Picture 1 (cartoon, rainbow, N blue to C red):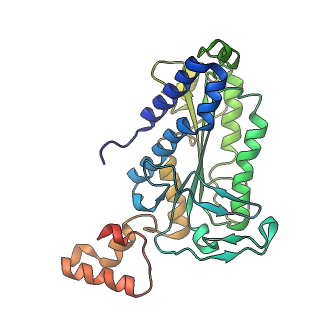
Picture 2: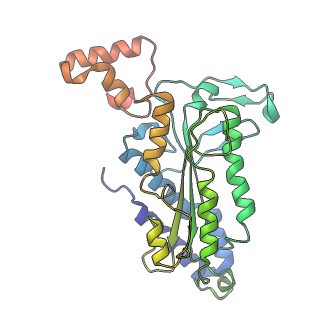
Picture 3: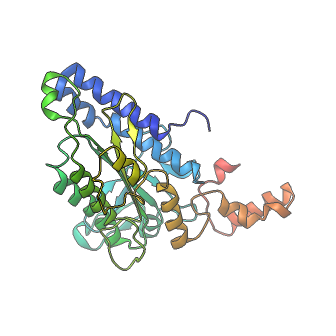
Length: 315
């Protein structure tokens, strides 16, 4: 597909929006651009693209490519919340339910538990300054999002992309309308990696509701003209972002394998093809059927009661 945003382009756009806002109006403008979500939406789009590149049917992604709406407001145990990126299952339909437990007792859930538990869900966050100061609050928030959804739907496959600026922006320089950066704190980077390794790779659906099935800690150096994305422990050590004697491994949190891990976890839990064309193609045995037979087979799948959300696009 042409003109799809890469992660490198996404972080470049992010930097441009942040730096221009600081130059134009200091901290006030920087805060306004962050609250508008315009910078982080670039990362949302890169997530969608990576999903598509790994076989996900783009018609099942919400919000759609190059759009910020509609987000799906999914119900967990404690609250309903708009999710940043969702991939809906092609073998389930929304079913309105009235919730009967937890703080949402009596509230309407327009999707229903069966649909919700098979919706692959990804949230995207970023922290570019005050990284140490805000760590506890933001980490607890990250954990609580997974806990909320897994408490209601233990089988649900969740992903988290958390981007941090290393070195971080110097918030004291915002008043001077300048983009400046603090001295690198290698121990802080080590703390972030250790913390996110603790909440990734959830396998057992009976426990660890606070964990995610896959997590990407996107470490980016925005001090460079072209932002640098880190992909390995060796790279982080080479640029003094990690101590040379570190025992921590970054591998497993890198961007490049994020969607692959999520999709693998999903297919292990629910089966293949629910997020892609493969579900239809497998049923049709396309390699051994003529085109007319293929269409007849698809029709029989639909008539049998298996409703596939990608059929309209397919035809």
